[in-house]
Image 1 (tube, helix red, strand yellow):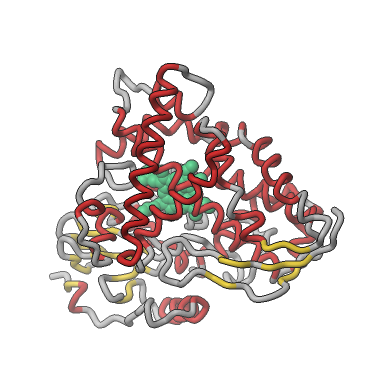
Image 2: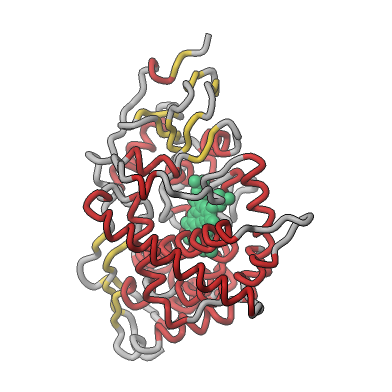
Length: 409
Ligand code: HEM
């Protein structure tokens, strides 16, 4: 008879108490060293070994718990908990496959490559004003504004709306931040505004199709099947929300890591062909998305442990990324020359059916930005106090990252 997970003696992790991320990471390492793959959290269990994180994310009996998170955070407002349409991230099985198939082509590596010149232009425009001064706040000057014009370009939305997009994306993601009840009005307003905006844009493109994502989503068709207007709105919102705060926070994490490793920054500037590996390594070393959430859609027996229906588990992408099996040598060493081990990809884009739809786009954005930054901000050093988002934030990164560098490049 398998033992219920609730009856196992397991180490306990309390992320609200263990605010220090480095200390928490160190604890995961200790637990893994002691042979634990599962630890207890306040509301469920965290999975901390690479094989089990992948195993659970690829096991279709586990469903995405993202739609349940607001309730778990104590939100009772029906505007947030009930009125949501099913989206690619909250659906499973055939419904998910259908949505994913309809949009897959628009997010192919080739589609992302087409945006690389636009990415370089946006980064160059952001670096130009700070390059002569030799100082910048990487977050305010580069990371925050960077992803939005790219998403606008991808969707075919006018660039001048980037401030609104930025505000909506940040507000919608605040649902998962743990401080949500203080921010409900702002979040509800952002959801309504985003909805109205996207409906308007879809109407425009139906009459006047162009060479952009929105037009191809409108036209997307598989065996006579199409996205309805409601599904289009949800999909576009998912792209705006999924594609902005993630990329900008990941970029801030990346620059902070490189600022601690000046030799690697210089190496990337000299050898821009290392960019693809550098992005994988930096996302492994410090991922902006630390974990994902799943619940048992039925009683599940996994590794001889019974997880009763509705049990929550949190596959820890961050813990998987420092699993000793993921790297040749010490996983706590940052080295952009590292060759990834086959079958042991960094996990910050997740795994299984919900694997990040925008992974090719995000990779391209980070590769382009990091190379240009490394070349135009040589000798980068932190200069001042770096402030980080609270550890309970769903998507982690820096709030302020003041740096100096050699001017005039
Ligand atoms: C560095 C940047 C990014 C990171 C770290 C990231 C991370 C993730 C992760 C971990 C998941 C899986 C969530 C889960 O399993 O519960 C995910 C899913 C998703 N991401 Fe990303 N993401 C990034 C950029 C993007 C971009 C640029 C877009 C769109 C333009 C995007 C759109 C999506 C969508 C739509 C899903 C849901 C896919 C599905 O459920 O089938 N992401 N992302």
